[in-house]
Amino acid sequence: MTKIKLTTPLTDEMVEKLRIGQRVLLNGVIYTGRDAAHKKLVELLDAGRELPIDVKGQIIYYVGPSPAKPGQVIGSAGPTTSGRMDAYAPRLIDIGLKGMVGKGKRLPEVIKSMKQHKAVYFAAVGGAAALISKCIKECEVVAYPELGPEAIHRLVVEDFPVIVVNDTLGGDLYEEGSKIYATT
Amino acid sequence: MYNLGKHYFLKGGTKIKTINVEEITNATAKLCMEANFFLGQDMIDAFKNAYEKELSLTGKEIIEQLIKNAEIARTEEVPMCQDTGFAVVFVELGQEVHIVGGPLEDAINEGVRRGYAEGYLRKSIVGHPLERVNTGDNTPAVLHLKLVPGDNLKITVAPKGGGSENMSAIKMLKPAEGVEGVKKFVLDTVKAAGPNPCPPIVVGVGIGGTFEKCALLAKEALLRSVGIPNPRPEIASLEKELLEEINKTGIGPQGLGGRYTALAVHIEIYPAHIASLPVAVNINCHASRHKEIIL
Image 1 (tube, each protein chain N blue to C red):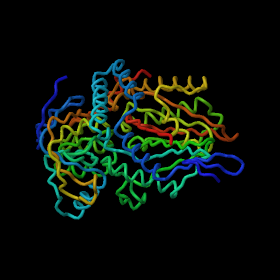
Image 2: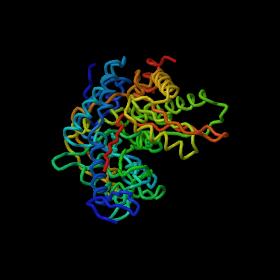
Image 3: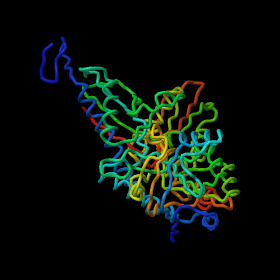
Image 4: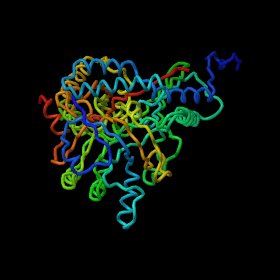
């Protein structure tokens, strides 16, 4: 199957072309964040303060990597369950976040927000953490080091393989994909 | 008492084996690392079988990546998944074993502490469920201790990831709901989980006992080698039927559609109260990890 190469930052035009089921290879800078970091970001937004990262045109990868062994850029780094970020994601999409990478279903309000503000949700293969870490070429903590694996990391990725699950038309591959193979 | 190396005799002739806590700590540390680096051959074989038979191309591609991932983890000694889990430790302690040098639980926790540090495993435990500050060393373990006959001490470490644990469920059915009620609850739980627990999954089911016994049965069911049926024919047949039903949902690898939603269903049963029919479903991701040692 053909794979689409995408390099961050992403524009509306770039994400509008994506459709559910497409294979994408992500390149460039992406940021990591899990629930604890999202909570802090949204608290800053509530207080009207500046965020430690500019999310405009960016992708957040929901991951809490394992520690790097000596000589490694990063430890194992597969996606975590995205649903835990649903409470916060629309706030970041509102201010220009263009992509999220994780695993598992999103709530209808997050899908609606993606449609409205032109953003997409990609699935990475959950549990393929040792394999995915090979695509990560640089890693540095840029905010909340006290959160350990939950800190915000700035990653540089090369051909990180993901699949489009929710596109800007409101499509949902989790719904469509299972329908095709269901026999009940 | 007469000392004979690691053994001594009690008055009356019972032979007692001594095991120092240091041995327990070392073994636990090693098991924490091995469980996270080396996926069992039973799982690899199950992946290969699923790869051959999966109809979805995306599904096939995903299973291929899981096989590659397990190979990288094994050869480079890195965790197969970044979520290196809650250290769930099962200890079967022979009643002719005398543990010396300190408390057993401390020895296990020290082993977890060392294993997670030396193995560069992720520290995923918060010390208080509401205050949520990371303990920094992945302790404490969840310890299940069973006293058994003999003079062996068996330690099994089964690191359990949060994603699949969160999709697990328990229900106290009415006895009148019977086997149909059990099947419905297992299927509903797997369907509700969808892509979240990283399918293809292994489904551990406990039927019977009390509330807490039933949950433990479901967890213990996950320790069985994948594909080995329950020795009771009626339960083995229920396992087979549930696996077929689960794989008809179309959820598939990673929930993106396909025939392999689950690789196995393992059921353990226990007698139940006349008023109760408890059912517990403990879902495990494809990183179905456990390693054991006998001291």
